[in-house]
Amino acid sequence: MTTSRPPTSPAETDPGDPFLSVRDLGVRFSTEDGVVRAVDGLSFELRRGQTLGIVGESGSGKSVTMLTVLGLHEPRTTEVTGQIRLDGQELVGAGERTLQRLRGNTMAMIFQDPLTSLSPYHTVGRQIAEPYIKHTGASRRQARARAIEMLDKVGIPRAGTRVDDYPHQFSGGMRQRAVIAMALVCNPDLLIADEPTTALDVTVQAQILDLLADLQQEFGSAIVLITHDLGVVADVADDLLVMYAGRAVERGPAAEVLRSPQHPYTWGLLESVPRLTGDVDQPLAPIPGAPPSLLDPPPGCPFHPRCAHRQRVPGDACATERPELPVGRGAACHLSLEQRRTHVIEHRQPGLG
Ligand SMILES: Nc1ncnc2c1ncn2[C@@H]1O[C@H](COP(=O)(O)OP(=O)(O)O)[C@@H](O)[C@H]1O
Ligand code: SF4
Ligand SMILES: [Mg+2]
Image (cartoon, rainbow, N blue to C red; front, side, top):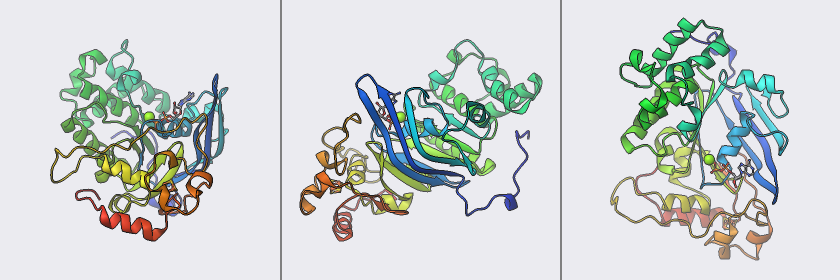
C-alpha cells in the first residue's frame, strides 16, 4: 500500500501527549449585527487512535470549532484566541502556508454536505487524486491507482470503472463515501467528520461509521466525530464533549457520560433520543425553547433560560454566576453532585452507554 508519509514508529509518539490539544479557544465573528461569540473558553484533548464525539444542538459551535482547527475561517472578520496544538505545533496564528500543508496531509475534514465538497465539473477519481498529487508529489498514474484503491476501500463497487464517473452519476450514499475517500487519501493523522451520516439512510449510516472505525484501526488516526445525535456516538466515541452556546458543558469518557450524564442539557439531549432498546415508538421529548443568540449570550449559565432544574440551585446563581467545567470528567453546572446523582438514578435510561 502506498502511504503519504513514513510510518511513525511507536517509540516516536509519546502516548502521554495528546495529538490535538485545544486550550481556552475563543472564536468571535464581526457581523453587521455585532460580535457573534461562536466559541467561548473551549478546551479539549484528543489522542492518536481515539475518537472524540462532539454533540450539541444546531448552532452550538461544533462546526466553527473544527473549521478553526483547520484554519478555514475568514481571517479579516474572525478573532481567534487561545491555543490549538496539533502534534505539538501551535496553529493559532500559524501562516496560511503551514495550514495548507497540514490540511489534507495531516488533518482532513469530511464536511457536513458532500455536495459542497465535490465539484460537478471533474470526475470523482480526479478529485480524490488531486490532493494526493499535491501532498505526495505522486505521478498522475500513481494517483489514479490510489484513487481506485480508496474508492474500493470505502466500498464503491467496480471502483476501477466508477473512478471516471462524475459526482451526479453517484447516489447520495456513494457521494458521501467518495468524500470520505477524498478526506482519507493522504492518511490524515487527524480526521474531522462533521455530521458525516446526516441525510443518509440508517443502513448506509451504519456502514459509514463502521468504515471510519476500520480506517482508524488501519491508520491509527485521531477522529473528531461531530453529530447532533447521541445515539450515533454511543458505539464509536471514546470520549464525549457536550457543547451548548459555544461552550463545553460536559465531558468525559463516552460510556460514562451516557451512563451517568451530569448536566441538565445532556439529560435533555438524552431524553430526546429515541430509545435504543424497548419501545421505538416512544415519542421524543425535545428540550423546550431554543438556544440563545450568540450575539448576546445570557449571563450565568448559558442554559438557564431553558433549564427545568435552576430552581433547585439556591439564590439566583444560575442566572448570575457562570458555572465552570472541571478538568477531566465533569459538568459545568451549579447543582450539587448529590442532586445530579439522584436525578440520574431516578431517570436511568435503558440502551445507552
Ligand atoms: N461566518 C460566520 N459569521 C457569523 N456567525 C457565524 C459564522 N459561522 C457560524 N456562525 C454562528 O456561530 C454559531 C455556531 O455555528 P456552528 O458551529 O455552525 O454550529 P453547529 O454546532 O451547528 O455546527 C451559530 O450561531 C452560527 O450562526
Ligand atoms: S447551572 Fe443551573 S441553569 Fe445551568 S444547567 Fe445547572 S441547574 Fe440548570
Ligand atoms: Mg455544524
